[in-house]
Image (cartoon, rainbow, N blue to C red; front, side, top):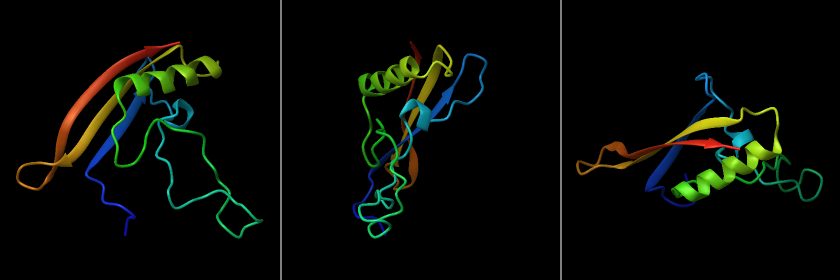
Length: 112
């Protein structure tokens, strides 16, 4: 089903200072779509919905520095975003018993 097996999966959540969710795509933490390449020749090689760059790569876990750099860049470029957000990174993977479990969780407050 997948072109490569995913061993670990990072899941992100972002909230503004009031606790309201902030869209991950606007913070450059969205899931890139492997199955949706940009159009190369008028509908012949994809759907044409190329998304912006993301610090989130399926099957890899971004470092704290990569997450903070991407989010800070987005906050500085888009004045409609809050001045600061709290980002939670939860890493899922297989535990000792083979079941999917939380391997780690980190939280950062990132400001412009």
